[in-house]
Image (cartoon, rainbow, N blue to C red; front, side, top):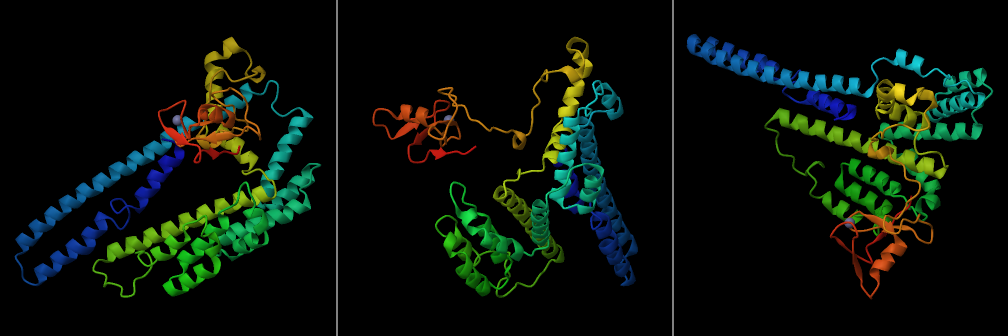
Length: 397
Ligand SMILES: [Zn+2]
């Protein structure tokens, strides 16, 4: 478990009925007590009614205790993960790493300033950018400033469900987005989100016909259009009368959450394409290093090594490399080069990496060598899976 999973578990508890404010306790007060009261007023035997009420109170107590237990469990997990991810005493650590000081070299100072300015600019925090420009000799290029402003504007629009600015951007960058080797599916997903948000089915179909038919060769457009006829999330022609308010409510909540997740996904997708378009790094470099150090657990690992092996390895600032591996999350593993595990040669444009059906990757020359003898398919050198020549995928790093 990491912090994100632990926080996610805690968050989902807050919306689950057993632990939320609309949970068992409220149900008891709202339903059972009121019902008991009116039954007694109506002349039923109070003894019997009270005995039944006692039973409900007991059950409710059990439910509340169960809910609390999972709540405390989840809260404890978050605490444990935070402790695990961050070194226990940051002040003592910075002292230990100060000889020689981390940022005393002019080049290092400039690099740090640059990466901070870049991060502020990317986020469009212009007041901070200006303060930084005053304090240093650096300046944030005006061309980047206008692009960053545009990016922030479009991202904010996406968050508030307005996809038009993003679609306009795709329209004016359509030749970039559709060009190989990485044709983008962003415009399709934007149109799909608009399509799904149109409640009137007929209007939705008209929209799809007008805007989405060009994606038929690569995306399941027709499936999407026909599925809306069966999709329970679009309102049916004759809505059934709701018999249970709770279920109707949770359906609506689930729909809202789904919509929010979809918009978040679009934001990420848009940001990726925007950065690719202007050759910006995909992520904010400052954010990446900070995350690797904290949540990724790198600083914690280095600190452990310093404490345990410090005497043997000498001053931590003079280490050439880390004495142990730091297991980074998969999203943080970067492979700018690929070396074929069969031929041990580095992949090139003329000998690119190819992915087999099983997911293993080898270089094209190795693949062709395995194809010798007129075979149409090869057995993966690492597992029993067969891959035919036509389905092996070229990969880009
Ligand atoms: Zn394989």
